[in-house]
Image (cartoon, rainbow, N blue to C red; front, side, top):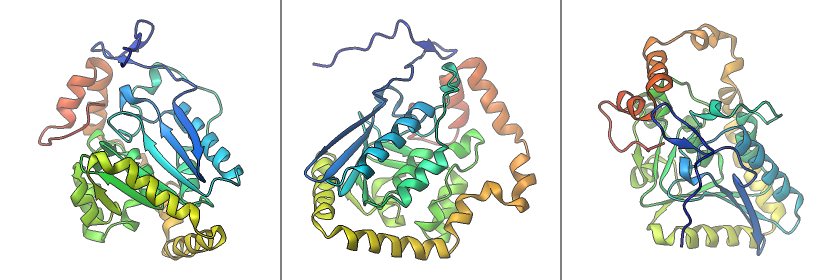
Length: 288
């Protein structure tokens, strides 16, 4: 039996939607049989990513890396979504405590010395899409939905991984249109390795991670590094760190009136009005 959360002390959006405060349980960790399972655990906001979640995710990676018994990692999300991306309401709970940069954490997963498997149910959009993308292998439920919908917000790309997963045309489709992509299309585009029925997702991810954990770890580590090295020699690191590129400085500074207007609607009128404005002409966007 699920117990309803007590939201009486929570802060709310302008239209009255309660947003949960940061919690030490925003990321869960467990390990068994050589496999660590790291779970993003903010299901009421579709595991939206804030500083606290990123801090806890980094700590969970520390734990998995330090444990010699752990030979593979599964990354997943609690509830009906993997992650709806960056938390647009993080400012309701000011957080000045030290936290790792989100790009650094995602690139840590990219180069993590142990293989990582993303198990994706529901929406993996914005930074959530990129989080699934930097894992070594990604298994999607048939109800999974991917995409860089923060483009509709007027936001840039947090971690530029998509051009290294998909073809040029497909990468532009993802990064210019901001559409939500169903699991079979994500499979066709190279964003995921496998798409399975929803009730088989956990078993499929566990089976894949168990195979990885059973293999000689030094060989797995080497082969992962070799594949990553190919993409890094193609410019992946420079692409991900595009904010340091002097030739892009003016474009990065430019203010977009449409995006600014949409954020003003969100701040003044709340989530529902913002979502209507953001998703005009689109369907199947996440509720968070």
